[in-house]
Length: 126
Image (cartoon, rainbow, N blue to C red; front, side):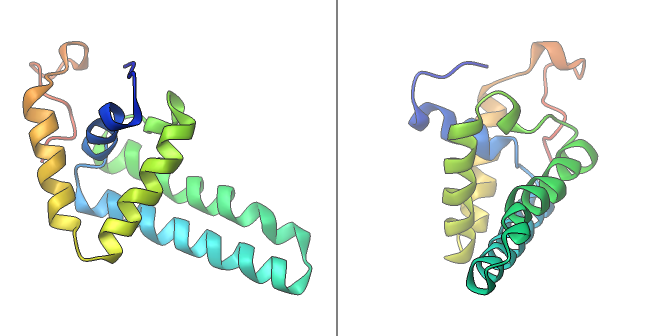
């Protein structure tokens, strides 16, 4: 899918994370990667700098394939996906995970997937 702005992309990004388990796996992977990266910077261990992308993506991508049954949004929109991940995590840490679920449900209901082979529904609809 193509988008003309981040604001247009954001609901799609959330919809590709429609299940709470996927969002929490993202949060855990990203925060663990950030913690190890910070540790590496504080200790002068450059090899730890790889922790963020390896752990962040290494935990998030399998969640898409196994839980959501979709492809990560980062495949098509890496910059906006990074921004979306940060916004999603901020909302989760602020106790707004249920709101994310509502954004996902609304977008999925309004945007049927003709090429999914699921009768027009995205595979990730809970």
